[in-house]
Structure formats: structure tokens, C-alpha cells
Image (tube, rainbow, N blue to C red; front, top):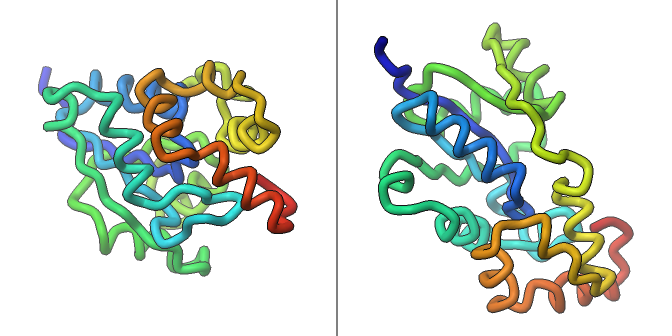
Length: 177
């Protein structure tokens, strides 16, 4: 049986956590290549998007071996802030795909309005693995965030002093992390 060529996986990866890692590994088992869209690529140093696109790319890359990296296609996609045109905007940035995977309800709805079936990936300990939860722990100085992201990401985030950055963003008056 021939393996399908390419799957699309969209995320903000703020930060890249075990749930993201699990999803991409599952897709690599089913597809020859996985197109990983780094959404909101223009946004950084904000409560919901504290990391730059380059930092998010690095977080992902440090988690995979060379064989896996050769099958991953990373595409930064900036927001257009208009859900009516977002899917077309994504398609302008990516190579041809055979399938779309996401557990995000908005992503599923927007692609389905374009007649594209979006498949889900079983969740990997969803609640504590959500980026907002990890960012909240970091803002509180609670090192338990480290158990929700791959070890290489912990090392990377420590190296860029991510916890201190998020604390500063919160001190500057941000309501959400």
C-alpha cells in the first residue's frame, strides 16, 4: 500500500509541547512528509505569542532527528485577521497537501467551509499540555511546566530565558498568558 504524500499540521507552538510532538510523530508514521505551519508567525513578545517564529522553529527542530527533519516542511504563516480568507492565505504559503489534521475547532470549521475534510489526532493529555497552561506556569515561576514539554525544549527555553520574558510580559500589564 502506498503511503500518502503530505499532511498539513497547523499550530502556534507557544511553546512546542508534548501534545504537538505526539501529533507530528503520529503524522510522520502515516505520511511521507508533514507540512508544519507556524501560525501567527509575525507575532512575538505578546501574552498569547511570547516566542518569535524563529524560536518556535528551533523548539520544534531540537525535538526531531535528521531523518524526521528531512520529512518535515516548516512554513511560517502570518495572520491575516480575517477568517473568511485565512484558508486561502495558508494555501498561498504551502506546497500541495493530501490531508489536513487539527484538533482546533476553528481550524476545522474554516477548512470545512472550503470543502476540505480535517481529521483529528487523538489528544495526548490535552489539559496540562495546552500552551496557555504551560505559559501560565512559566509566568508564575512554577517549574512544573518542564514536565509538559520535551526535554530539549526545556533546555532551549531555559537558554533563551523564556520564563523571565513571560514574567516581564505579565508585569507589563498583560491579562492573559
